[in-house]
Amino acid sequence: MKMTMRKEVVTLKLVGISGALAGDKTSLAVNDVLATAKLLDSAVKTELIDLRDYEVEFATGAPLVDYNNDTWNVVNTMLSADFLVFGTPIYQASISGALKNLFDLLPQNAFKHKVTGIVATGWSEKHFLVPEYQLKPILSYFKGLVPTGNVFIHNDSFNEESDEIIDRDVSERMQNLADEMIYLQQAIHNRYG
Ligand SMILES: Cc1cc2nc3c(=O)[nH]c(=O)nc-3n(C[C@H](O)[C@H](O)[C@H](O)COP(=O)(O)O)c2cc1C
Image (cartoon, rainbow, N blue to C red; front, top):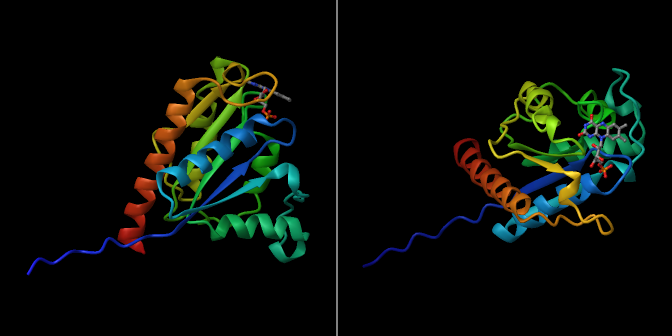
């Protein structure tokens, strides 16, 4: 008798964080990765945290219960994710202060067994390695597994009016990032549950 193995459907929650408080580009880029991940694997659940929509308080070192509801909700949504994609605009050759503040609110093992991808937007190609040298070490500190295919998006890759990504090469790299993230997270899930 021929036995057919039923493939286990793994539902993974991918949370995207847009660390920009100003324009639309970072948020659109993060949303693109979320949408692509869903297209690649319909069992992936997605949620976008656009920091423009929340009043996240400055980290003072106080316990999380001492902060307002928005701060509490954002931190807990991040902690409840199976894996995450972070978007940052490059500010002064670094990540945004809003994103750094969010990290200052997290416990040390926040991203253990979680894939943590990166998309960054900026107006200077010279800063394409900023996420690699400045955001990756922070994610690694939290024990996040950072994929190889992080994406830097120059402002010229966006349509000036709609802010949609119009560069095919960038879209392809975002698709590769989503694909790599799902692959790695499924492997972590198979190993650690
Ligand atoms: C205060 C400030 C500092 C910036 N510094 C840099 C920088 O050092 N390097 C760079 O490539 N872009 C820099 N930019 C450009 C932004 O990273 C870029 O316009 C980004 O796409 C904005 O994202 P948003 O539309 O999500 O706000 C800076 C923008 C601002 C407002």
